[in-house]
Length: 304
Image (tube, rainbow, N blue to C red; front, top):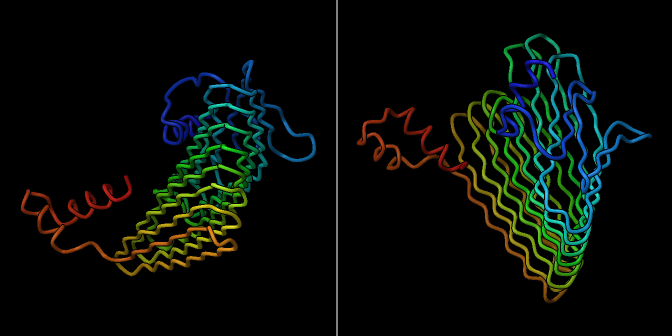
């Protein structure tokens, strides 16, 4: 791994030094390091760039699959498939860092597919970040396809709060009987950055459920759009919530969609977009903070 990858690794994974357990580190469209375990096998695809991750039934492990672009003039594309065995309990630390100190664009496009077995549980943590002082754009476009098996559970914790110029984030999920999906998205844009999020969840199994919460902050001249679509095709429950703070000259567009195709489908959507309340700023200023410090404290608390 080069030095830029090492620095991005700490930001994305929270780990400094060597990783433990199963991992695959992608650097500039190639594999920088890989390790499988007895219960987690990571193998290269033979027909396209990417890897297959096969997790044994009943396994309880952590898997790291970060990807990095460390200079301009790179457009990385990767396909990663996860096959998660029945009753497994897995934490997957993903995420991507894109870095450019030159005039070239640094782009990462990742397509991840999850096939989650019966009674399996998955925590998927994905953090995206851009770094570097070059004029090239830093772009990350993740696509996540999920199928949660009977009584399975998946929690997605996704964060993008720094220096990504353009992103289109797409998540499509299908839930079978008793399956549950929890999504927590945190997003911040600034300057002229653009961000689009697309959620689509189909609840096809009886007693399936989804709880989707997106929190975002839009600063500068940035633009954000959120599409949230939940479809209930059986007795199920779905909740979608979009909360956004808008600042400066930014724009935020929240487009909810609920489709009930079953009389016992209970679907709810909530949305709130607004500026930081003046009384919140005043209260913090009385404690000795400047206005800028007060705004930063509120924003950090909102996205926490």
